[in-house]
Image (cartoon, rainbow, N blue to C red; front, top):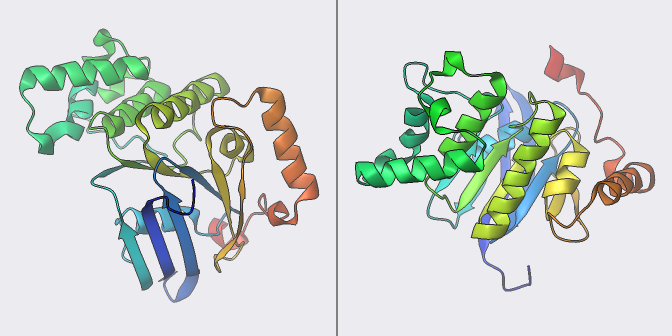
Amino acid sequence: MGSEAVNMLRLDHVGHAFLGRTVLDAIALEVEAGELVALVGPSGSGKSTLAHIAAGLLEPRQGHVTRGYRGHAVIFQEPRLMPWATAGDNIAFGLRRHHFKRSVCRQKVLAVADRVALDARDLEKFPSQLSGGMRQRTAIARALVAEPDFVFFDEPFTALDVALKRRMQDIVIDTVAATGQSGLFITHDLSEAVRIAHRIVVLERHGRGIAGSRTVPLSPGMRDDRMVFETVQAFLTGDRLFAHVNDCDERSLA
């Protein structure tokens, strides 16, 4: 990630407010090509709002967003599947605007389903027939099937159990490494951020800009559990940037 790296995403002086209350102010953020950036911050600091603005789902009240990629996908905390469509058809929905032949679509759906541990029988089921983890894996497959240049992850693994969360994290790591995709990963879990991201950006606890960022040693996929644990402990106990990362803003609970 040198000085000549291409910016896939750039936020300049972005701000936003809800019902007259400022939730983001003067946000400046860049994500380079091939870089996965984890955005962390206290509950209520505006992490998801920032991701939605960056992805074009919300218009900022001020500032500008520059997107240097051809296409992106968004993976939300909730699967948001179409209940009337099978898992396979939900995944194929991600290919709709590409006008592939039906046989090509089927091959792509099967390939991405295999990556997220869904088999052909699962693809024939409707969302109501799938477990919560399977629904989320279907949503992830839908986002990845068209091979977007950039992926926004809005706390997508929060509802998954530990083992499945780790499997999904591995998919993210392998996808970025294999394809050179870039992404912005919103999470409240610092261990998750350390495990999957090239760089961790910390949002100021009242959304008033970026407090700072830290590059995580080694490449994602090269970090064992001990390294992740020790890095998290070092951040929490010895780095003032992370002093408030686990705080909860009572306004977010109102």
